[in-house]
Every structure is written in structure tokens, then in C-alpha cells.
Length: 172
Image 1 (cartoon, rainbow, N blue to C red):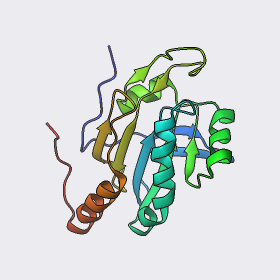
Image 2: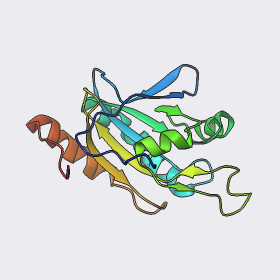
Image 3: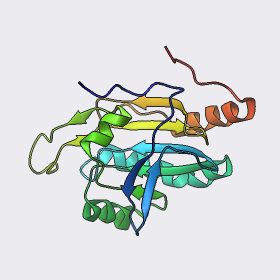
């Protein structure tokens, strides 16, 4: 039986991934701050790089608003490190996202179209916002690289949500 997709309001049980530079990234669970989690397709995706470059430029705004940022993919450590080295990303990056973890997040999974694209199945884009208690406030998943939330709009909405203690929507 397939893993059910998460629903806004659910608690995201912790998902642990290795983190570039050492240690681990834990998605979900209790924490001090709100969380912005971005699942990206991997090194082969130019649209992901463009999106994550915008996020990198905005990371201080997100931090100032009380958010920790975690960016994760199914890429190997070597591929994730190559992107960080090339693009100068300064947020935490997790790698080796497994298909079981992808299923727990509810993201779509794709096979590479060619061996030159990548060498493994990978997650399609997903953006999640979690409250400090690990409950999911927002889920935005796409089945392809072209649809992702605008990060400026999302931040503006999250600032409003935090300041006004708005509940998760679309829970049914």
C-alpha cells in the first residue's frame, strides 16, 4: 500500500539526511524556529539552480522572519557539493534523499529521461513550511520542474501567517 501524502496540519515525523559539510539535517520534529523545506530535483536541473539562487539571495530575509532553511535532493554528496561550490549556496543542503523519504513527503518521483540527465530516480520539486512543533502549515508539490511558489510572495504570506497565528488551510 502506498504511503499516504501528508496533509496540512499533520506532524511531519522527523526525516534525517546527511548534510553537506558534516552532520545531519532533520526535517520535521520540534525545533525553535519555523522551517522552510525545499526539495529540488538535483544537479541536472537548471530551473532548480535558478530557484535556489533566488532563495540563497533571500536567506537573510527568511532568517529574520524566524525561519530555518533546509534544501534537500536525492543527489549524491559529490553532486550536491559541486552545486554548492559552483553557485555559492549558503543554506543547509541535505543529500541522498531516499524514495521512502520522498514518499513520506508526498513528492512526485521521476525516472531520468537519459543517462546524461542523472543516474537515479529523483524527487520533483516540493516546498513545505512547518511550524516549530513540526506541524505542516503549507505543502506545495509539483510533478515537474516548471511550477514552484514565488519565494517573495511566499515569504510575505508566511510573515502574515506567523504574525496573525493563522491555521493551516486545505486540511480536508
